[in-house]
Length: 197
Image 1 (cartoon, helix red, strand yellow):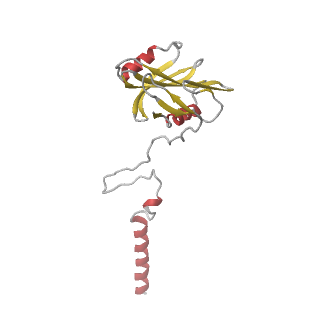
Image 2: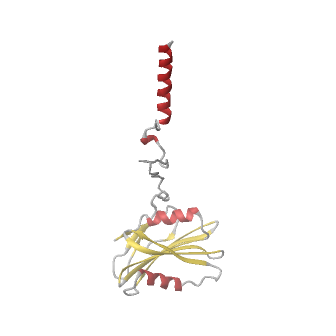
Image 3: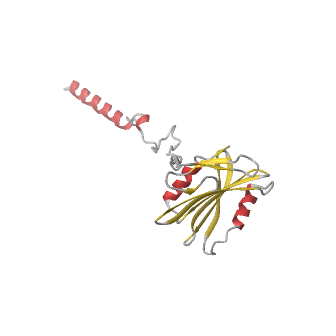
């Protein structure tokens, strides 16, 4: 009887140790957003909040010359585009026109902020439009300003610009009938292909 009690006690102790001593799931099997604490300090590991990468565009290659330098290249999304050899590519669907364009500028030795302010000054959209310079971003190893413009009639425009040197500033403009998740994915897919020549 005593040996039976000892055996049952041993089983209970083993079960409790298995339940309370920590997770039996290997670390490799835990989801990426699982929380964990080490050393009782409450360190929390969370999933990376960045947006998943969009696959690069695989359509026609555009060669965009600079004012006094070779310039850059990028690819259009797959589909039927009108133009797009160097400066402007457009396509149409039931919602209207989508356009991707490049401009080479010679503003002299200007800062990125000055270049963005010059671009903002060119907008002649209705007063009801939302036009905002958002956070700068890095594309093809260079810093670019970003301006987003939204209007019920004019649609959605995403404009980027960068300064290469005193004679070469570049601008990429994406225009859509309206802002959609697909439009933003298209922007990211094209920007993923930008490369300096």
